Image 1 (cartoon, rainbow, N blue to C red):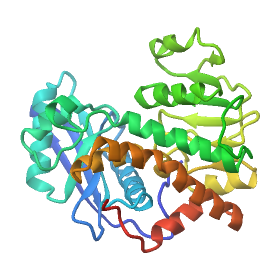
Image 2: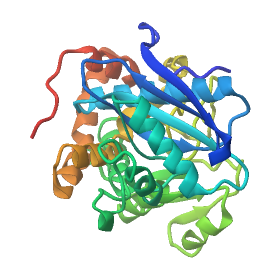
Image 3: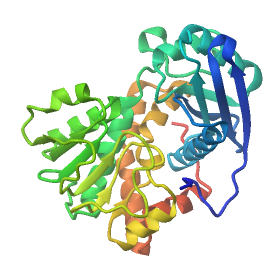
Image 4: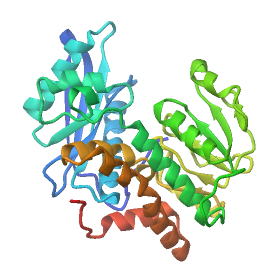
Length: 349
């Protein structure tokens, strides 16, 4: 099923370009920037494999649209953007990411990019050498903002606490005893799991990588489950791939879906179906905005403390969203789109 993770009431308006350079290790690459009033579109560079150019293009456009709404929701002065790259077998990363940096520098004056799934701060340093004013997220000791995952994780954590306040009727946002399943314990998922566990949640975790699960096996109040298992839980927190929640979504006990993964729904209509089932879904592009805030802070010359403070404020933004959604008796996704469509001042301080 085609994944639709944008406001279907409005057409997609974006610039798209395909780039290939197999001699330098780039099998194919797509860059997308959504058109906006802002000078730049900001989004990550994702490295993966796609079955076709068409699927890569679709994925990149949808991810760029998600970045657009993420910037709007968090009042950041950027349009949306995304770069998707697939390397040739045995590619030299230094050569491939130098070629990509040259592509960004020469052909994309409106694009600013940073790390994403499959890339790293170290790879951003390679691109920075040839596109210094367009690359964010280098290692801290190289002058960049470093790994954005702690900021992303704190936004997710605060969003879960907002769900606890408004959906689970826990006024202080306490998580003690709440059964939370974190699916995917990479950089972000591991930090989310740690934060909710420290808040007293009954934690369930799984991952395709068994080694990533080792640190959880002997923890009290923590259960490692196999892929495909469906323990009875209260809140599902997807922190790996997208498309986890479809029209047929059914999970014992689940009352809320709040996670870091992008494009969690197979279509926006799924948010309406979940709402009718009494299951809360908080828009992933709003929940996981801490990473964007981290790299935006670098570009805006803000401190790391400023970035962390703004990431922690995502909980307050979710409070506002949930209060309005409950008042309207509408899915938070629909309300979030409405909030993004309103004229709102962007963050300057």
